[in-house]
Image (cartoon, rainbow, N blue to C red; front, side, top):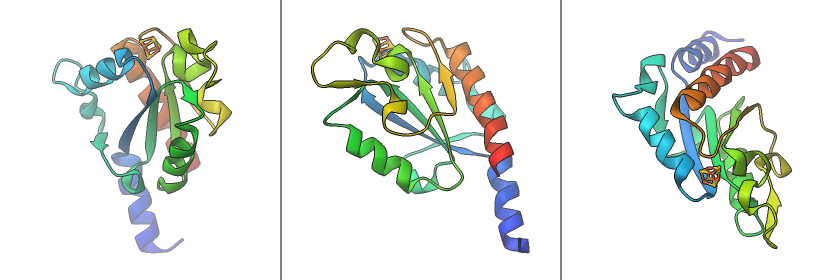
Length: 145
Ligand code: SF4
């Protein structure tokens, strides 16, 4: 591995960037993710930064159920992420379809479409659990790097 690649790897390990995607949630889990990014929970103290471009993202946070309409968007976002990347499914909907799992167009959890590295349960997932999940994702990201 060349010097530049090692330098980029070190930067990514020290400050991985997050992308948040709402697959089809009620917004409960999304509000808790936003809470994590406020000064109250201050997720950024661990070096992570929330970004809007999947090509810049090392860690993908997904909330909500996967359905026939959003499955393709989720797959494309995952494909566009920087490699290696880590996926965190947040909340019961992202884990299994949650309260929407019986709906006719719902496929289930995120892992029906893309591989998931970390599962954060809850309805909604609490900010403390989300932060734990992101820290576990950081460890997995460093293992993959
Ligand atoms: S797990 Fe609960 S709070 Fe989170 S998106 Fe699903 S229904 Fe909403």
